[in-house]
Image 1 (spheres, rainbow, N blue to C red):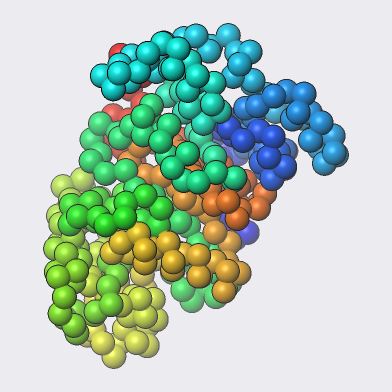
Image 2: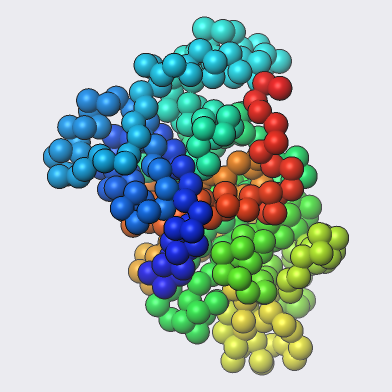
Length: 350
């Protein structure tokens, strides 16, 4: 709770509205109750009102302060469907199909955020990532000055020697299977920006590989090396202060004693608080391994580079995890234009 406690304190000063499309999921209901009780803002649950009330009663949870919207009964349904039709007209979608899509909670929730009726979106507790990401990419899309939509996992381990007092930002663990050099650089910079926004300290970003500074040869290593140089360049262009180093093996990145033996001069090695994985395989495997073996608190996937704040939580998340993710998304929303300039200025269909 060390890390998420500071995030909660930040959000209490600037409460936000978070939409949870999976309103009848017990873990989501519990997280929404805590979200309101902690004065973090207004939770919005999507789903059948009677069903949600019955589940809340079974859990002995009050729904006071929690807004419930059934998309099928919403006064915004036709407007949302029309805007979605305009967005997808080039793909051949018709009015009836658009309406059917918007009736789905993830599509309705994405449109709420796009239309500024909610400040952030959290879903994924019982759905595959594709069911969460598809509506976001179709409705919210990539922010104007961003070129890559990716994700990161925020991991808090008990051993405070790692990362920043035990907190590590890991990207990308949920979106891009095989990022290009340009995408890997974008992932590094956007993950570093989020870490700076949440932690308030200078990011120390390690771009990871199975090699440390040429200890092995392989085309993938060259890609990481090029991405490291490009990330540093892009950060400088943004006047964003952060340290980048790569390619680094993960032990060289986070263990000072090993870094001292392998590298003589690095601002990142042995002290990294941001870890960038070379592909989705390594990122997803590593994040789940750390979470379960070390019993770490894991918050993600936090989506980066979209036009509005959103997250795709793991199906293994508990109520505390969901609350933490919602708090992070809320804090993102407090200064989202600083993270992604120009985000949120255009409504869907315009």
